[in-house]
Length: 413
Ligand code: SF4
Image (cartoon, rainbow, N blue to C red; front, side):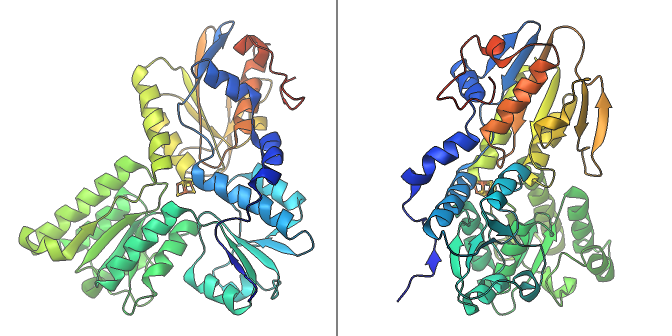
């Protein structure tokens, strides 16, 4: 029987490796790492977080997409939405002839132009159970790059739903990963979910549990974030918590404690054992990047922070939120956000349209901290470093004190 489901790549890593390295590696970043993640040029100092950029799940997803192109040179290849939240990476895949499908909650509409035999790449965030069923029925060739850390969350969700708990997910109800995770609860008979985005939303659920908010208030506030037919009276009697893998760890822990306390107030401590479960499902890559930022902030020697990543990237937003609590922070999604005139375009904390800041780089000696979300390749980080140096007339070679010409592939010469 012909294999039509691939979850472990095609064994073409050696073939696509050079292309991936040429496209996404940065000699500037590699040299900075060799120099201890920080270096100066004149009166400007650049410090990189110890962990940043592409995570293991994104590395794998992008590699499998390249392998799929190589393995099926003559087939139509589609991607279920963006493979990761990075415009540059998605653009490159499109130029390789991979078509990114529009977002839609209805599988029939999302996969309208996909036919049996077409190749469909499923992203690192995963897809909903309904989409998976739809694609299997169409007999598409599926290249499933769902990250192992996301699959672990799904396992927790399955256990909770199977045991009669409503799954409460700390995540954004509209995010692909959270939609896919929530859909796993519905596979089980009577399975329910509720997505809580942040502390204020968790407070509403707590108020309901303590009798300070009505079921109607919960249904109205979470209209797009609950399973069909959700009844707060019935469905909040036993809850199991999980996270979108890329949320802010401190916020997840706070929400966990809020809900535990509210369940205890309503049912008493003795009941918690069978009414409340909590799992930390923040992935290790997200945790490592958040820990690295905390370590940078703790040293207290930064003047300004630049956080690089897609504007709809949750893990990048979490990094920006952490940094903004301590110093001026600019979340940018491409090197061109930084203009020669020292003007920067950035995503404001909390969302909204891209905005501008003038004179964002302080005069005189300055230390700039840089980190990047899990879907940002090193080449973009390196280009941002060069752009910042260029504002004061320096080059990457002056920063690192080394020749960065390597295999003719450097973007900085
Ligand atoms: S951020 Fe975490 S869960 Fe998401 S792809 Fe990367 S490693 Fe996997």
